[in-house]
Length: 355
Image 1 (cartoon, rainbow, N blue to C red):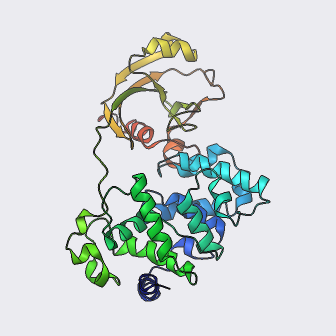
Image 2: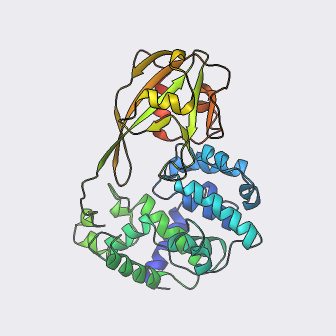
Image 3: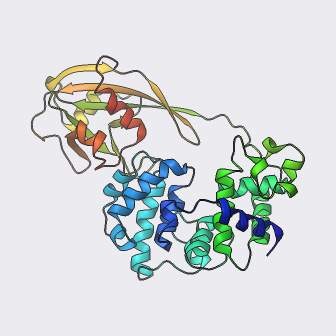
């Protein structure tokens, strides 16, 4: 075991976190679920979602039997919904193709939807006692600073170098402890902002610390101007607290989620009324809400809500992908998956003076 790994393991034994929900009763299922949820998401945000998920789906079999709508509902607010769709697909594949057991093989794990090399390595090393390197965001930060590896970590040549370094440090023994330790160091001491270098167990050999140049590492993503797109959300509601929602089509970032009727900005209300079979005579009022911007990783989306009060005729306008539900249910019960952008629009219906 090299000096780097030995120092991290000793530090973790004395100071590391050991009581996070996924660190108790360790299983491949719990490690996998936590690793997917923690992608680009903070620990404090993930904990309540993880606990609710485990309460509803305690094992891979229960998750595999679930409906995607229920999974998306429990995921609502966590973002990056492709993760939820992938865990649903993966659960079904593991049950049907692997007899409900996670493969004990890196290549097989990486063939499953949503599982990359780092996630596979965490599953193997933490829950299966099989040595495998990991390279999540926290580990990248530790390694780039320690070895003063310049450049954006997602560039292919930089990532290749980081994997080589990660492999060189991963020990052949106590690798479960090592994996937990290096992730923990990145999350607690070697943080993105305001790192606590004075308390770091490897600062005596850390290149960035010795150069007093911590902020240079890891390298920033090359700046690229995000394109701006625009859309309209048509929000149909009645005076009894009912609201008409639509399941988004099988493409795009909101695939499978429910929300207002999303259409192109030039779409006229009469087009939507004709499409869903609502007579213009049933319209009580129309109000255009304030535009707002929702930002994704690759583009900005400018959203214009159009609030349409209607006189509803029972559930005449419903179909498989178009249903009436209550505003209270949407905002409080998380029975259906809705995006954060839709949630903001629905919440504004409770604030008519601000709408």
